[in-house]
Amino acid sequence: MKFGYMIFYVADVSATISFYESAFGLNRRFVTEDNKYGELDTGTTTLSFSSFEMADMNGVKVTRSKNHESSAEIGFVTENVERDFERALKAGATLVKKPTQKPWGQKVGFVKDLNGFLVEICSPVQ
Image (cartoon, rainbow, N blue to C red):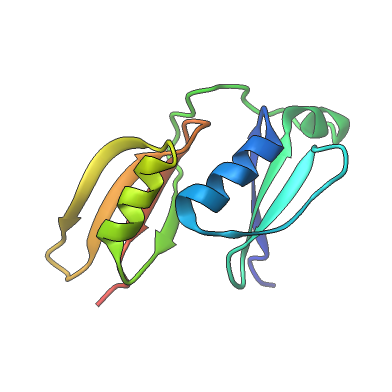
């Protein structure tokens, strides 16, 4: 078994996909014609967004919240944390914590996306 994709439920799939393209430089794989599901190319694991309506259609109960306060985060690894952190803020991400150097050699910063999901922007682990 392998970890293939992560799906986050959102109110507006198209807007979320567009935000991730602008804020994090990701490439769209596709968005369904009805805008209920979309995927971004992030390497071996796919980052996906699905509509609340799709959850209902699948018989899955999900939390419908604009400000997702949870114990999960989306993490992006980059060689240039400062540049990519600023790009995210310029695209509309909300500042949570500016990048800081960690004792183990990694630089880590946090923002929230337009849905309120926590996003970590970090350097590779040394």
